[in-house]
Length: 121
Image (cartoon, rainbow, N blue to C red; front, side):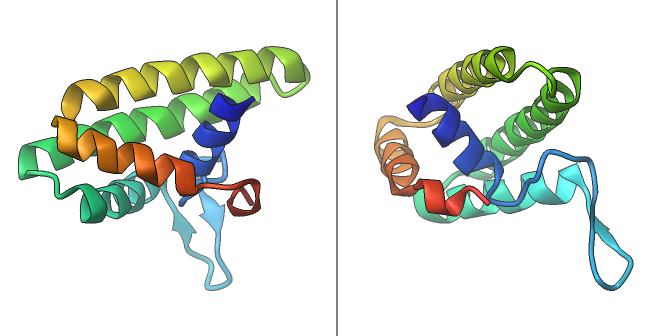
């Protein structure tokens, strides 16, 4: 359950599970914009290099797209959705760990612990 909450907290930094979120002015936030915002918030704290930033943004974009797909596909099967989201979180954490230096990874792990259920929606 902790993995699911962590995944949701990371993704909901700027994501809601749909490709575009309507705004009052008629515009919307795309997955790309959400991925950029997520990446920027992580990059600020972990001091990523430009190459790491680009790779992390790609990972975040993939994460958000897969989350949206899973939510649409498994919306009637909550147990399967939770398992799929937990698996997605494990893959994401593995990919992020491979991307970051040890000091950066320690900061990133600290960021994950700051997320609470209150931040999810």
